[in-house]
Amino acid sequence: MNKAELIEVLAQKSGLQKRKVKRVLDAYIDTVTETMSKKEELILIGFGTLVPHPQTSRLARNPKTGTPVMIKPRTTVKFRPGKYLLEAINNPKEKM
Image (cartoon, rainbow, N blue to C red; front, side, top):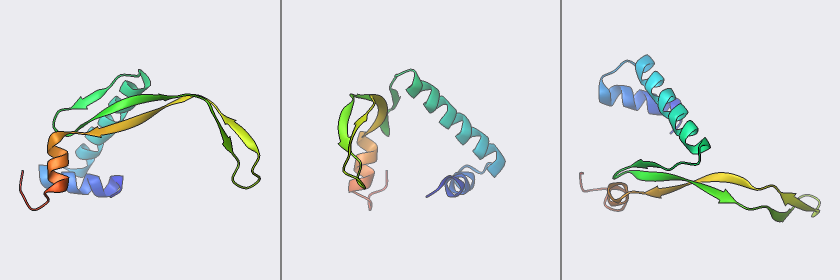
């Protein structure tokens, strides 16, 4: 599912106009981005947690040439699914 498809589904389920749903989704994405850039967790109880995860520098290889390349340290994001999301994924026939 891409962003446009998500907006379509959310508009149908919420009864809101697509334009308003898009604004809300963009605000959500901006908020998540700001929170992650501050290295803070974002917890959505029952759904999951977005956690900033620091990565150290490491040695890798260029796949074309095999030349060693040092990858700079950076922060990535890990997602830990919540209880209800895991239940919904593992028991798709049961309604939440």
